Amino acid sequence: MIVTVLVAVFWILLQQLQMPATKPTPEVKSTTSENSKSALSVLDSLAVKGRAPKTGYARTQFGNGWTTSGGCDTRERILQRDMVNTIMSEGCKVMSGLLHDPYTGKDITFTRGIDTSSAVQIDHVVALSDAWQTGAQQLSANQREQLANDPLELLAVDGPANQQKSDGDAATWLPPNKPFRCQYVARQIAVKAKYMLWVTAAEKEAMQRVLASCPGQAAID
Image (tube, rainbow, N blue to C red; front, side, top):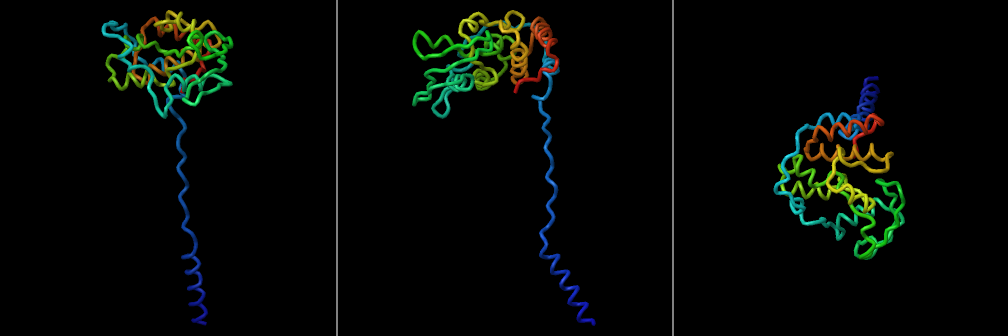
């Protein structure tokens, strides 16, 4: 009888030793991020100041043109991202494609060439001179170069519309394509928040007017 009990106890202990250890339940990571906030709330977090002097501004303050990685420069990457039906060369050049232009709402056929490439240009959503006058002077040279090549800051757009915008902020220029204005302003806000830039009082007021028609507009990722 005693032997039988001992055998039974031994068998139970053996089964427990062979059972896999219970794994702890993985912790669910929060998906909440800065990008889930509304553009209006991010705008309210930005400092409001007057423009600093433009003294010392030059395009070279933001690096010597487009940066290159993996044999492909920033311009070509943005053309690839924003256009459809693209045809590429072996050297990572976009030879042709179709742009659904966000600034004008029209379709633009792009063909690379001396007389044709300017039909589609890469816009710095926050104009670099505007960035310079609203805090970028305090950034390091590397940070300014990063800003100028950040996909968040760049859009492929209609060339003439980009030229018309020039160095304007939201108080002086908005895309003619009104349905895109909410996204445009939200992207400007996201860039300014990311690089610790401020807005002017007139700029903030203009942004608020645009976002009043789309209060649920999320901050652009």
